[in-house]
Image (spheres, rainbow, N blue to C red):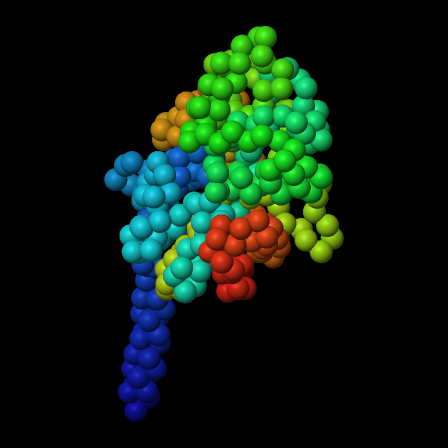
Amino acid sequence: MIMKKFTVVFCCLAFVVLLMVGCGDKKEETVDIDITALKGPTAMGMVKMMEDSGAGTEETTVDGNSYHFTIAASVDEVTPKLVQGNTDIAAIPANLASVLYNNTDGQLKVLAINTLGVLYIVDMDGSIQSVNDLKGKTIYASGKGATPEYALSYILSANGIDMEKDVTVEWKSEHSECVAALGNAGDSASKGVVALLPQPFVTIAQTKNDKIRIALDLTDEWDKLQEEDNKGAMITGVIVARKEFVEKNPEAVERFLDLYKESVEYVVHSVPEAASLIEKYDIVPAAVAEKALPYCNIVFIEGKEMKEKLSGYLNILKEQNPKSIGGEVPADEFYYIR
């Protein structure tokens, strides 16, 4: 009888031990994540993450996630991939994130801000020292009907300058045309020649013409205009994810954000090494990246701060042109807060 009881107890204990061992050996399922980023500043912050996850090699798994990266040349490549579910996470312009949220009935979540403003006013003669100095000038710019136009209009208007009456904006189809306009002015006509350019194109232009100098950082000018009740920042890019993917893979999203944050910190604080990686992944040449990175405003901002800055920015764009954000500022569900 005693032996029988002992046998029962022993079997029970053995079962419990086997159960515990089985649970301990159970491995978390690897999550495949397709990531798309635009060639330029919005992709620069993730190059260390790309390197650590073995981008372009067969070994792409880090902390339970298997990453697959695509660097796209234009938003026209990214948008259909997001809408059709062919990419899970993407780095895209901030206003485009709002447009896609509105156009897909809320099937998009914004995870973090990854790039603040990258727009700069440049001149060749040092005549521009403040926004007020732009009055009466001709400004060569690219991006009519997009963020550059709305940002310039907002900053000029807030400083008492009417973009239709007080300045002449010559809209070009490409940034290179703006640089050409500066160069074609020549020494005798360089006074008063002004252009609105984004990084890293400013740096590229400066390598071709050393007379081009940064006169105004529009991100700084934007920040000067913010009030206590509107903490909106000038934002170039954000990280977004498909809502369905976030809901199905919450832990994978958390791991991605942690790794992405580390990557941004590396890029910001290890500029020469990051520049080499930026060239490796064919974003821009290392020499350009090393000079441009300090001006590209690459950041990692998430949570409530992200919501405050991004919603404020989108509200200002809505005032400029509701179509620029898809009609309405997204609801609270748009913002992923962990």
